[in-house]
Image 1 (cartoon, rainbow, N blue to C red):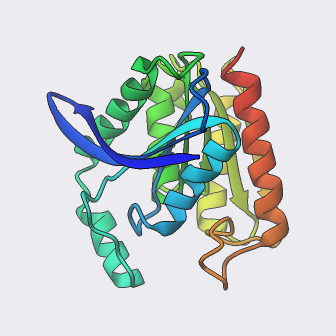
Image 2 (image 1 turned 180 degrees about the vertical axis):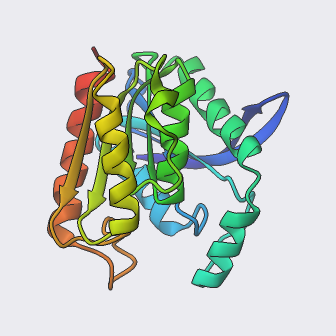
Length: 227
């Protein structure tokens, strides 16, 4: 695996992020990885690297521009202060960057995000025609189903049963998506809570649920980015 910090174009300016690639240069599927409210921390870099190890090209944009929160209060403040319009443009820039690379194919890009990043992932799926499939883990702040009227992205929502605030909203979204033809699925893991995928948060982490969710995500991208 090769990993490096890069800059890429975003709305006439530049954004930064962490890019991870397999060791070979033959074309691979591309995935954008969207951070939790902590920032582009070691966990998100690790997840980005896992995609490279699974034969994807993965790019995690740094939506906090170098800041990484260590305490929940700082993370909450950073999330509240996030310029979401700018963040969406930077995510779109990351999608465009991957699409433009000769070593990324097919040209439909996947997006995955966690918590705050899960919500941003769903917003991206609703408006970006270059996105072929997404996996949103416990996505807070998701748009309503009507936002997906013109979307063609395959939408995988993943939640924990105990994370009732988020799961209730995502269940409503899933029900609303039934009016559209594009693929969508909601997976709710029994007894799992918020941030169950994050193995650096020992109190929240659910090993079995995380393992299954990772496999489902890879399978989802393999199925719908190549369709």
